[in-house]
Length: 288
Image 1 (cartoon, rainbow, N blue to C red):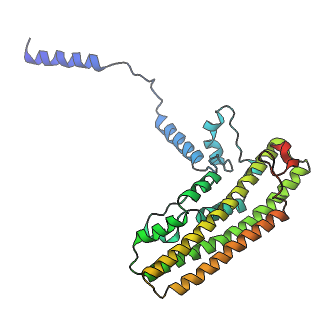
Image 2: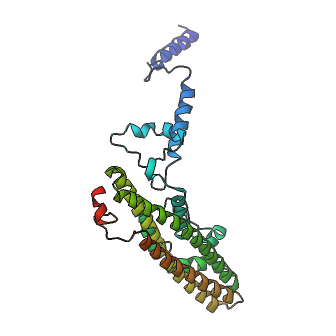
């Protein structure tokens, strides 16, 4: 047998051994297109989740993207109807997130970390880490400003940003408290099914936990500003001290007003009643 024959038979042998049956059945010619459609629908469903990680079914694209979730036994879309986030609740979470995340100067000098989504457990973690007074002082020192005046100017900008967010939070919280008071009145009247009432009460509890957490974090941030102002002034006294001190006084007054006003709102809209098993009041315990 010649070399050409050996080469030819060898090629046939190799070809026979690698020509194995396919592991998967052949897909139709339109399979790539279907793959693109499935990926798009999946992204549509995953990209529209709410603050609490639940799928938001307010849009047609999301409803289609929810198809995989609906196949899971026992799945409930808890964002439909009365338990969907209102615009005021969305604003409340946005401003609360800004007041429990990084600081304004970190966006320019790096190391800014925004806590998304904002939920009560995130707020508890924030109290132990990113919003403590020592953390803020350490962040100001980490930047290494060229002068005490530059550091004081950055601290002043941070406090002004917090003051703007507090104003926005107060406006949103007023609307949320008013709406929550109406919801509780509807539940007391007995016109809402127990299952729906339970979802509404859990949302009200979430709103209260967010507001309470922000007030605790605001106190820590105030202490951080006070310490940072003192250290910057001692290290390098500059002309920015008077402005920083004045802004600190204004911010402290804003925090104190926010605290007292929110407590007044809670009393006005009957949101500070005794709780039973996580409910707002004993009269509503049946809905939990």
